[in-house]
Length: 163
Image (cartoon, rainbow, N blue to C red; front, top):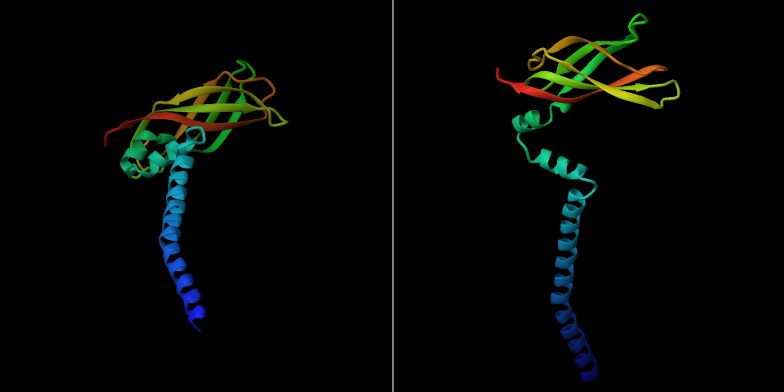
């Protein structure tokens, strides 16, 4: 009986010694994952850094810093003027920002051929004021690329204006 008691006592002492080691290991694992998440967030070619910064910005700061997220092009049409060779691009630009009004929005127009290959890009500015929750129609006349069958638009920048 005494032998069994000593064995159980030794097991208990051994288990008690393992508790701090187990807790320390668990803390190290948790710290490693929390640091790894931040490191992953700050890597990936800077795009995650931008997302990290944007999540820590106020809505107003985000609207000022990233107008392209709040200005969207809608109902865009395009055609080539056969007499000048210029491309006529018409559409509607909508402002979904909560507080920011914009002006001088710069659109980047990407021209694609029938296979979907990018032929080139050009930019045009819309000098109208675009108020919060409003839209404006625009017409751009730009140089384009022969063989264009489709276009895509992207808001590159805009100036924030006071109310």
